[in-house]
Image 1 (tube, each protein chain N blue to C red):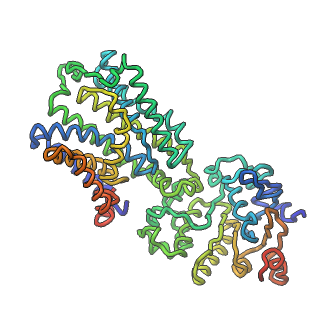
Image 2: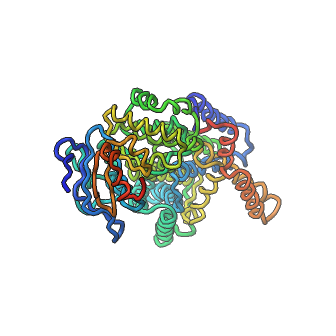
Image 3: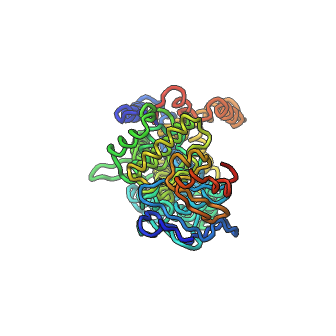
Length: 320
Length: 242
């Protein structure tokens, strides 16, 4: 980040949020639904980016934090009949707590070992979901009824199954997470995280407790990913073990790499790009993954820092 | 041999230090005293234990036996990130900057570490005026000499009592070496005591107050630089040059 005045930076982010707000009234129904999903998952990618992009810790276990939020919110609604706000908080709390425990264990390793350890924990989590199928629904999953996905405030009620409400709810969550992430990366804590990524031993030699900072980053990242999972369960009404599979640990990595690691808007751009490339190409051929693969290879070859990472490198050095 | 400097003025005192890399012992009952406001040079062949001594002070290599005291306070047993807070700053060999950050951001990280502000920043930049012109430049694009200056500046942002410099002149052109050594000499006036690991005899003679000859992990001899100038035989004896 170079010479970015706070006003300019916040104006850009508020502008993106405003654009997304306006799109709600312009987009056709299908794309409105797709955008709601993309924003909810961009929150997942943003949480992942905090750890991967800013701290340099490559995790292959973030599906565990996403699904902790997904099941934390979904199961409390399904089995305990909790309301949407309480279930959402439960989901985030589950993810944060899990991230604390996993962080304490996994941060004893680094590099490839960290990647393997997080993947192993995520596999354990995935298998536990299958093992306790009586409660979790196993690989069939559970559908959360429409009646359970209504927020009642006083006399008014917000039905999350309504496409416009769903879109706005996803946008609200994305906006909060985006602005919080921006504030975090611009803060003292955020700068220390970047320093750890650049050279952990040197950061330690300046007097920073790098393990404590990394643990705080894991918990923050886990909580954000869990918020995404909780929102996904409540907005789209389905929880299933596939969200805890290794594929959902790799996807946020792809989205972040595509959009630009260590850029605040990169996760949104990457998720958007990936979703639309898949969506468009699947309309032409059943071998659409081949085209997606070629697109990814081209992007890696010509823009190795991702879309926004490359734009920052070439033209907009101030981009956060 | 008892070091007469250990008696009263010692700011940083190492006594009976043993260190190991795995099963291999690298420091043997090492004794060392750094006095207030002096530049102490550790001199010796490659592998003698000079860098290990610095790393042991910083808590990067655990002490198997012995003690390291700063102003009477024990440093051994402290977590590595707590040693800088106690007042020791370390500039490792090879600089190790945050290459993707600008010069200003590197300095900022140093200042934040101990909550120092603008006054410290200005006094540090006064020591390295060249950096003032490069504040917005990415540190990875600086020349070797400028990178060394930045590494020292960042360490000095901690306002340390003791600065550990590991081969600061390595790979630099003569004009930069002169500037670095000039700054090391200035630190003495600022009451920063320095332990300097250096391979260049001329640099040692120009800036050090005392020279400690390390050989096979032991402090063989500590001499005043004046004595060394008049009789450089110790340099020949321990390093084979001079």
